[in-house]
Length: 174
Image (cartoon, rainbow, N blue to C red; front, top):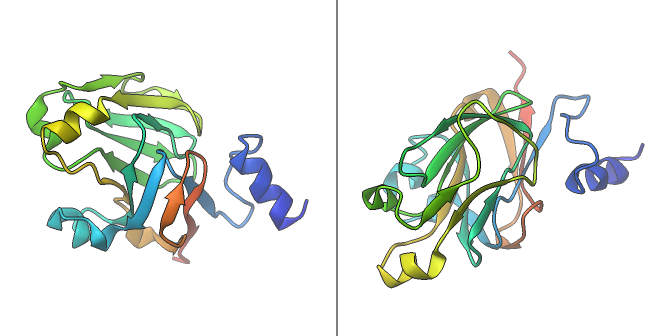
């Protein structure tokens, strides 16, 4: 199978396992505009304190699994979750800045901790308009908290849809 065919098949959800070289695609979980993590207003993410990654400024209200994996943590406020990918990446997805203060208002979870998920599966919904009306910055970081274990090849910032490539992870030689 060619590289293009392999990538195309994975993006369509037909093949979600890591490549034979151990690399793994992390797809956009949202419709919107992607940006490098250093461009977000939240310094904790911009300074890569929690890991490297990308962010998506959502234009929709649904968040989908960017990888196959296990929901390791779903915050009670439902604004953030952690997924351990099939390739060993620890992903943190955090919808908006300071949205933890809402205690779950405007957020609906469609998964539970410990649940196995497939790329493209609906994880969360949120009321984008209500959040914007209340003045929240909705930039959504997608970070790899164990990013030191990987080489990250980021896609160029721009328009993204669920399933579009945000970045590719290649394990570092140990």
